[in-house]
Image 1 (spheres, helix red, strand yellow):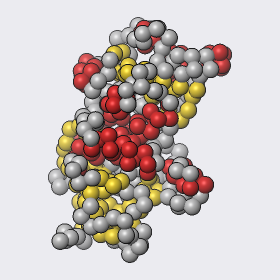
Image 2: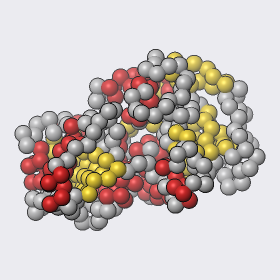
Image 3: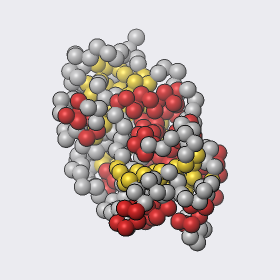
Image 4: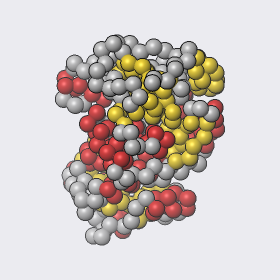
Length: 352
């Protein structure tokens, strides 16, 4: 039997840009004809959520806003047009809440580039609430043998880094440097790379993140805090000293984005995924030309990437490093995030 749906729910609401967060009860919405209502059991917390709260990206933010875009839960209500998902199914709400499905980008599997994309926890209310609406075409289909608590961060961090690895073109046996390897995205990037047969150089700061990335399969750790010459140390970590074949930039600060082209090998690829506020990417034109370097951005994955990333998790290739706390404790998580003191990911239990 379908579970009863309340008229009110607990949520974390930002009434204005910059906060404060207000933990309060709000109405439970009903899904439209092409939407589903998901009872969110767990939601990961992403650095993007902090940007949404601060409003420091050049995107218009919904006000008031319920943030969050890594929500895993159970389908409890369906729109009248929905036939390919059932009440009781496991499903996830992702960053891409819905798109037009008609533009040239949507038609060529680049739906994240749709000009009309709705963004969970940014332009529409997201997963820091107990019940969340999303377009049925875009919710992640989660197999019933997956744990909803541990899969929640895969719905953004996992999909994003998996897509970045695909965009990099790195092949089994080659080497990728992951900048920000001990964070929420980086810790999963280490594992996806390992599962794809790619050697990992983890770049981050501190012994806690050294231990974490080593546990997740990184062959080498370069501590940017202790390194006297980061470019030299990263190149030295590769067998031939030429540098990694690809660099994944998932850091939350600007400086690492200025160094990547200096240590990536000739014909290497630098993939930009992290989005520090107001940051710029600079590279030597001379070095970029004579080394024939590729620099590209990688946004969140499409629906096919989502299914593939989830399958890696289902098969046990990805073990999400996370800590769990209650939805009511979101501000504490943000405080730790502001200080750069989170290794892995935080997951919110919406029942607390």
